[in-house]
Image (tube, rainbow, N blue to C red; front, side, top):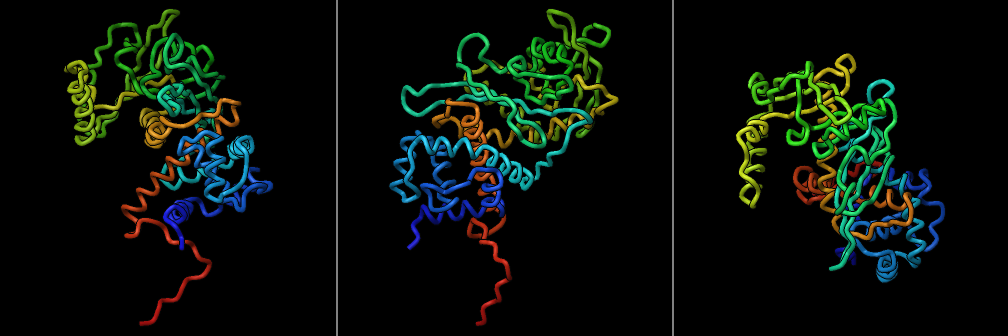
Length: 376
């Protein structure tokens, strides 16, 4: 008889790309199965460590008890390091299935999505870290991965934390939008597309005059309307020239944004200012990319891509709250990150399949030849 855990695992495996075993071999994650009976048992053991937050030692014990394999904690760590590229490829495939069209950037550009989140390891005294990472588009290659403390100088989300080279195009949320970070990126001859942080990034007109954002936004009164203005961000060492690209949201999107703002106030936050409620009607994106290279609509489209990936990251962020993050080397840490992202994508696909694809909540196994209908 198949137990519930095995049945659930088979349903989960059914959500993976059809060539997931072949990819494991092609990416070097599996050369020999030493200690495991199958690639499925190997994957199940690794995801037990990444997804359930077990330590390497506890994972080894549980894998033996479950009959998945007899391996040491050191062996599991080595397997985790080897799985980095394999899991990266699976994440790319699942993102494409989700409808996130990952395309190459503008000519000569290395497009990178930057993000950060908190990680707390299990236990009452579990260590807490801030995880900073950068993923390239379209490969989803993690090109930077850093851990810092959660308190103290230099531990917050900032563009200055990431190594940048000329022609990079950085996509990030409003937490990264501040004059110091912008100046650092521009100094490296790179560019940004960022959600505007109206609190930390005051704008001026291209001529250096006052820029009344509230008044300007009154010109964008139709849902879906796009408008842009040339603006300047003043920094301690000069100024950063760019464009403010604006899109008017739908009524439903505006209502959701306003509800979120008011909920924070009800939970003890400050009473929202009138302009804050006004800004909730718009998507405000700041970029240093020249209009000749990307139009306002293209800038917003690139930000939309970042937001689509961010929806997956939101699930990832809820998953990374628990887990023994490998800190032995960058390979194991990046593999852990891809494992978390893989679990997030599989969770999302499971919800999607259960709601809209089949009444029984999982995909049927694929067969090489159609099965005939039973006669009654």
